Image (cartoon, rainbow over all chains, first blue to last red; front, side, top):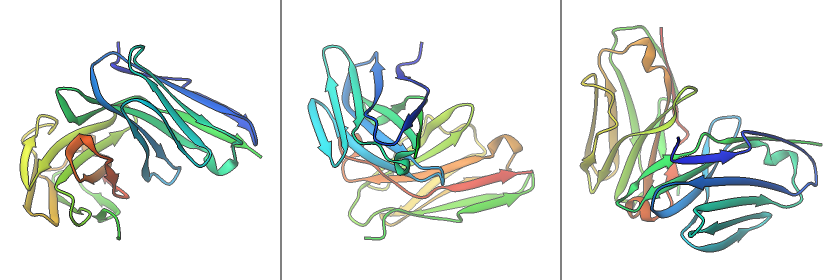
Length: 110
Length: 114
């Protein structure tokens, strides 16, 4: 079993829809990261969080440490949100060593 | 700030040739990471430097791979000799405090070994 599991693997939405991507992990962590990888290949860090909730524009990330679960929400989705979203966790004993999920491929149709 | 800079952006080479990938981290960042991304294995950490010192190279596949960080503003990842299975996208990332801060990724080098 992978230490970081994401769901769904693929997601297609209509523009304007509310989107949720889930991430579960099985190890003790120092922080959880959400990354976005665009079709061109570049990787952008969206959030790093170790508790609670963070918001940036239309993106919201939450984490429940007790349940070892995080969600990434996109409100009012737009075609430019189409990308692969990757969850990664830094282990509590080696925070620099990120363990990556396999990613969620999101397509937002106009 | 220009962000993390990597060169070349694309590299096509023949099996057996030496390949050198270069990275300039964000100024002031003391942590540098080399990652490899493939369809089969996703993103993998190859090596982590802190203050120019290699801290963890357990992800380096084999002796054909080597990495150096001669100063705070430059790092190289070398593959010698290259093999077709080394074809991947190689990312360099930097941060101000290892895994306790956001990692900023470079644009990647897409390597194809024929």
